[in-house]
Amino acid sequence: MKVKPQAAIIIVIAIFVAGIAFSSLSGLWKTQTTKEPAKYREEKLAEVYNPDDIRGSYSFSEISNLFKIPLKDLADAFGLSEAEAAKFKCKDLETKYSGSKYEIGTGSVKMFTAYYLGLPYTPSEDTYLPAAALKVLKDRGKPTAAQLEYVSNHLLQ
Amino acid sequence: MENKKKKKGAAALRLAVQIAVFALVFFITVSKWLAEKGITIPFASEASLHAVCPFGGVETLYRLVTTGMYVQKIHSSSLILAIISVVTALLFGAIFCGYICPFGAYQEWIGKLGAKLFPNKYNKVVPAKLDKALRYLRYVVLIMVIYNTAATAKLVFQNVDPYYALFNFFTNEVAVSAYIMLAAMSGLSLIVERPWCKYLCPYGALLGLFNKIRIFKLRRSKSTCINCKKCDKVCPMNIEVSSKEVISDLQCISCHKCTSEVSCPVKDTVTISVKKEGAAHES
Image (cartoon, rainbow over all chains, first blue to last red; front, side, top):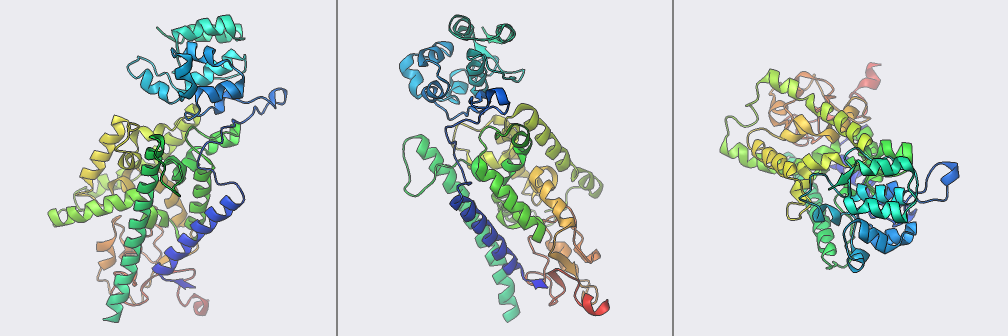
């Protein structure tokens, strides 16, 4: 069976169009965040949202609603006013802390959220938090002793 | 005369597809950028460039299998496009690279200028031994990208991705290293055809593997070949088509420039087919 180049590319385009159409109709095609993070796989935490699935496009108020963390606590931890924090997106932290020695970004929000709630989360070695976050975690969160110690060693002074 | 028209038709269709995909990807990037500034283009999705890149689907696989989550910035659309690309690669090899990839098209268009500026040196400057060794680099890149993405759950490749830099050059989301890579690849494209595809592209490396098992193979008929070597001259990846009966080279991008419908002057000599012509009679 022979195929001409023109036919080959038409078949390929048809496969792409059909594949996208089918996945769209079946609800599988997603090009944006659903604003509903994945839940933990562990049975004990099966109904709990996993902070590891927080995306850069999540605003602080969305995180506050999803994880039931007061917006003020998020704002205080990352050096924002409560009004600023409402629409502030995780990915905007990279710009806010762009001159810093260590990166403060979406990973930092994941770590803060998980530790605030005392949930398991393994940050990458280069994930840091602003210094103010430690006090918020200590005074208002439920971090484990190990988590607090980890944060103490990963603070942006 | 009619044959010449047909040949032009195949090449024109390929160019039309390349331009259409390039324009579509650029439109997607601009719509997303405008949406972030509060300007919404009617009927335009707010999808990011990552959402329509099939390589993102490959990068996220490990994390998806082990945690059920996607890597940052990647969505199900990337995975679906990756699956579709694999299906097309199983049929026609790395045809995604030859027809659809906008960064491949970009290099090709710069290369046309390079071929005019340096007609004698274009695509012949890298010594054969060095060229051969460098072509394995993209597998090193592929392994490094997959490993580092799995280890960090971040799109580490974005920091050196010239494709991302090309389509997001006007945003503030591009790392300096990606701009440098884009500049290097743009400059190199003036003297080497598709340098990114040949030496560094991890996605091309992956799709190229399917050239070994593709259903519709590129074949050269020894019995009708006149050894004019036109197929070798037009191959952007410098594959010596004239010395093979089945072109299953890992570097083949299935651009079909070597085929009898495009460049080969003899009808039915370089073709795309499931079985060798006359194989049924031979067996």
